[in-house]
Amino acid sequence: MIDKNTRLILVILSLFSFACETDNAPHQESEIWFEYPGKYWNSQALHLGNGFFGASFLGGVEEETISITDASMWTGEPARGNWEAAGVNPKAKESLPKIKKAVIEGNIGLADSLTANDFLGEMELFGHF
Image (cartoon, rainbow, N blue to C red; front, side):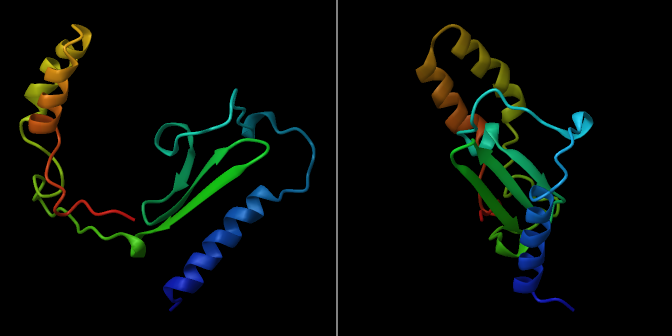
């Protein structure tokens, strides 16, 4: 059995092997072009993974950031049906239209209050890396 450190090293090496391809011929079907450098991890990174380990790539030509994760580094627990402890607020579904309406009408204070009280759930089991 491979230990966690060895598995992480193998993942890193395999990801870099894809990045170090020496064939310079154009591969139109397998290329992704971005119009500007990625700045925000949650909305502009290219995320690759299988639910157990993964990597996120963002940045540009001058600087690139590679973020690597592994399930063994996660502090959370499985929800096992306890969705409220995992961060799901049961009031969220009915509050979302009210939040949208408040934002559209420019009532940001109300939208913020509704989001904090009715949309965000408990983070007891949620965890982080």
